[in-house]
Length: 333
Image (cartoon, helix red, strand yellow):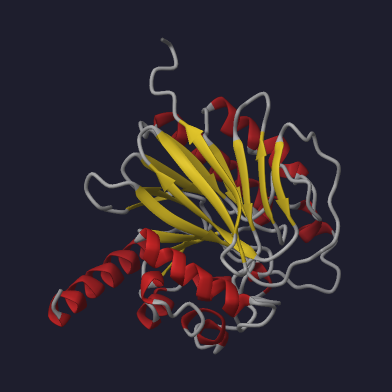
């Protein structure tokens, strides 16, 4: 590919994503739609990382190195980033050097120069939220695609990215010494009502073979934070009603795979991007808990029409857990 063609493609990516950002009305949780054009007749390959932005410390750089190696081996299409992008308090603005120190200068492998489809975590809400959503960051690094909530159409898969931080009551009622940027979220009740309606409607209308929901916070976990009660009560019924295949999240700084014995939904936690080793795990049904690793690492996913292959890796690239999730294309048969 010539340098001119690469520059042309880069310009189109920046223009399209910047235009989509301008369509976002922060006070109304409308789901914007993005499209990823994958490799024809090839599986969809992507990595998942979360809870990472610590300027390379707490083994963030080592995890990034292994991501680059796996990304090249699998010729990934993109990266899904499940939030807590910049510790401890998000970005101070679009010129905050942390964007380079924790992202641009860390994930430097050629294979990781693909779109990073990103959501916000609770630590991101402690800074300037609009900075992370700004097209200015995409001008600095065209990989950066961050919206509050949105849909990514990737052919046989549709991803539904959900802004989960505003669901949490205690961030509003007992923020302790933290200050959260709720601009664009208030009035909260209206924001959440619109978001839930939009997610429900989009899932119901989706014709994709696979439906995967992405958020920062846990729904089901044996990890440190436990189940997020507000998501269990408000979001989970929508996921179950619309036959979602998987929910991908971070927040717990671990790697985890739970399969709900009733709904069949796979809960995949990839929050080991940097600081980990909490040292606590809650009791969970061993028939549902397929993996709990209290350490750093990341996840890879390869999806075809018939199956999704999920692999978890530690900080050295060692395989911790594999799972092949079949897709029943004729459930009524």
